[in-house]
Length: 69
Image (cartoon, rainbow, N blue to C red; front, top):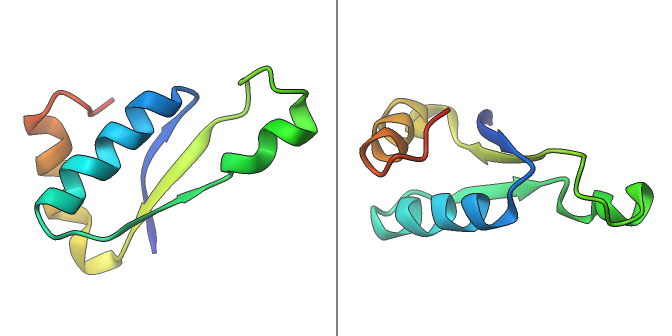
């Protein structure tokens, strides 16, 4: 697994997952429940992971949709 995106914006994370899913790429969001530890402030970034083989295509898809860093 490789990290594709790191963000504190939950909407950006969900949008990225949606566009990847539409192109048949499975992704996994990590650290979503860290808000319990941080007091729901939203300061800890969440990570979006993809399989190694999907990293190149996933980056291109996010760039195409304006979701790259």
